[in-house]
Image (cartoon, rainbow, N blue to C red):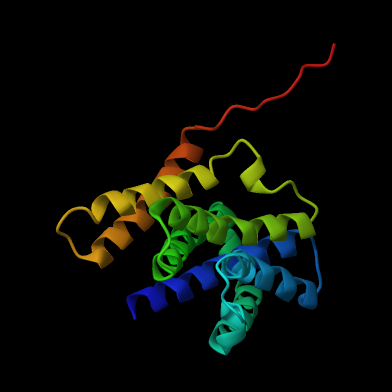
Length: 203
């Protein structure tokens, strides 16, 4: 039940971030729904394809589709309130990557993959819905820019595997890893911590 709740919360968070991006691009209602959908399930779809889950998760979980539709409708209705939240897109995107990273790690563990591969799956789950969202909305994906994004997912996964070496409940380790991802990304943006750009200066 704990992991199911985390999955649902991640779906809601990413769906809202998709809605906000789509609205900024002035898409119609159908466009908003599609962007919210691919943001919420894109990373999980790629993850499931990589580990051979057929059909992919959301095809077996109509509840997720219903939640995305309800989230989109609620976000449209209360969009003014959402936009009053400072940097609301950043907030929901950050919550989403924290939750979805650990959903991906859990899927990797269920598939009996090594910790490295579990962390890779967690990062894919967390990041690639946003990549698809940004590409469809004609933006350079956040993961490819200076802002720390995938890095915090990897570090959160490492924290999880470190914590489970100690005699603590798995749900505690899971929750601490999620909080680590969220807090680290917030701090990175707050203090402008980023990976270096590699570019050539024009002559």
